[in-house]
Length: 218
Image (cartoon, rainbow, N blue to C red; front, side, top):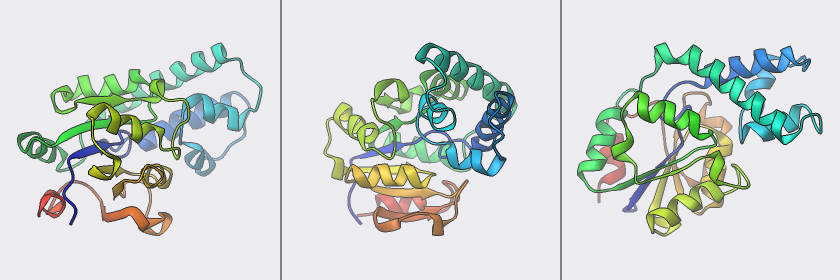
């Protein structure tokens, strides 16, 4: 097993099991704007930046200012629905604490906008664990482009090959692969057969069991 210097975490679906709330918020909002989109298709479209999703569903319909207003409206609906259920995936609290005590650097690399990153970090008091945060606001091209994770590595001053990514989506693991990084796939929303697993060292439902020992053993 390779010795990793840093752990890079996606946020939604990886640290918290909230993707159903994002999907439901988008599904209601998109159909309210006339999309006639199914819940399953909405799930397939839930990747990348909010503006990119709107462009895929409604090509050329909205200005950048309008997309920003819609994005905030969607995130407020998501936060209202998910806030009573806000908690880390099982085992992640001790996983983060063990990583922190072992002086392994950590960063968040997420397609979420900062208001959602802040919602989680402040709501669960997690800021001390993360030396860098790269959100949708910090990149030009979102996952599966490698920019998000490469910026994390740059801000932590490490090589891409020294990073281990934790992701829950096929687009996210592809982003890690494109960045030259190994990955742990968290199966909150997708089964192993949905991933191109050439850079995936392990599948896990959550952070319990021997996952930390498996990753950090020499």
